[in-house]
Image 1: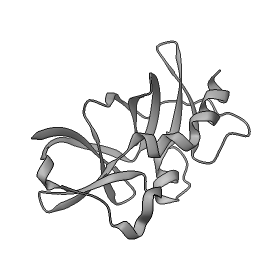
Image 2: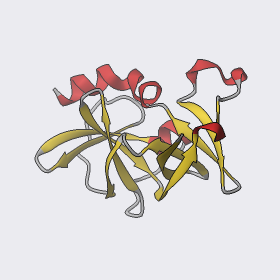
Image 3: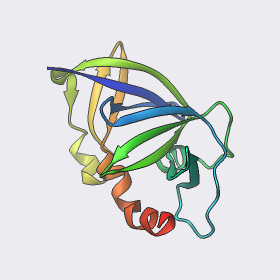
Image 4: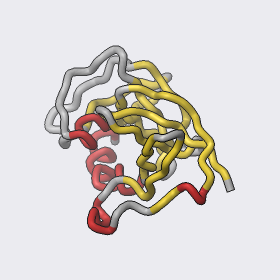
Length: 147
């Protein structure tokens, strides 16, 4: 079976999310900072009147702190009934991946990796993100910040 994936870059690595998880992709927008927010929390996005928490995947996945860049993008995803934004360096394309091309991550990495699979596509390696693993650690913090 084949599924579509949204491919994006964080630092020099390519990641992907299922197209069914992505609500929309925005150019970098002004975010409202939140005092004493957890590491990797970029701020709050006013999305058509709705307060959307935004995580900085550059900081979370690449451990790089850098100021917001107008060339970056915000990927809006649906997670457990709410919207969450993810700051990425660039959104590249939507690709079709056959399920047979997806392999689990190396067991040496353990269950703490924020991705559930690795896929080879067009001579590239894509890390397929697991939103639960990526966001769950911040879920309570996000809830308290946006409530």
